Image (cartoon, rainbow, N blue to C red; front, side, top):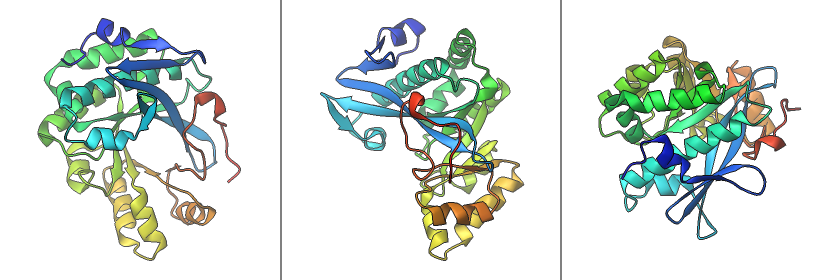
Length: 263
């Protein structure tokens, strides 16, 4: 069963002793962390919400969970929806609630948005109730394969029409490729760390081509995975719009994030 109503989601959500919203789904416990995204002036313009998953108190890597063929699609979609629900609630209670909130979207879940407008309406209603503007929310389509790219395109077009921003996550990996960008025409392209590493080793064309594609579709660029000063300096020379990575800020609870970096 796919959790499809506010009541069904709410039954899985509670406040922990730190005052943070968490969710329990079957044997899994879900909690939120956030990684800051910086502009050219080293100021935080938004945060990417990331889920941390524990099963019987043992950590489960989210990428392993969402890529596992042994995990039913319904469970993946439910975990994604619950993650989004707690991310939004925790964000709304923080001092960063006026910034951008980047939320990951499974392509398979995105296709459900295309089939039923009610999914978008429920999300919109929740944001309104929490006084978060849809213009603040960036829906990141992750790099996983989609069962139907045209359903995904329709889903993202509906979200954009409703006022959300759309991003392609991890460009250069798996299904986050030129075809998906040209199909969806996102407002933001997040370039995968692998292209950054290749650039630093002298293979510059993949990253430069990604930037060129973003400019052509009029999308802003986020470079992901910056972990050293030299990487940061090299990306600054390319005049990229936004920067993200462990060197600038680790994924953590919102009360630990600083609004500026000294990098």
